[in-house]
Length: 59
Image (cartoon, rainbow, N blue to C red; front, top):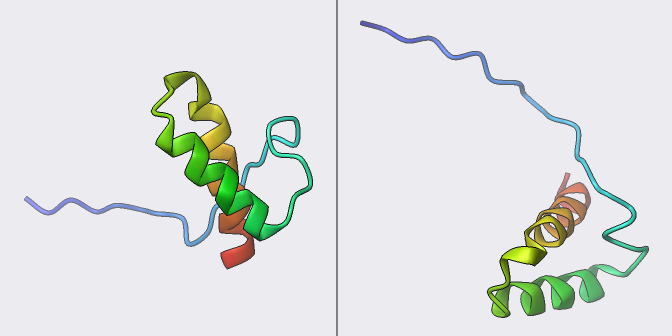
């Protein structure tokens, strides 16, 4: 049985400006590292937004 998947070639990046203020890339990486190091589930939305903000830079 062959399964065909249709994956988008690109997806729009979602960044919640309320969670990630205008900060530099270096500040974003520092905030991301701190949030991950704390192992706090309450910060998952912030972590996702920080990763999304960095993904925009990579695109």
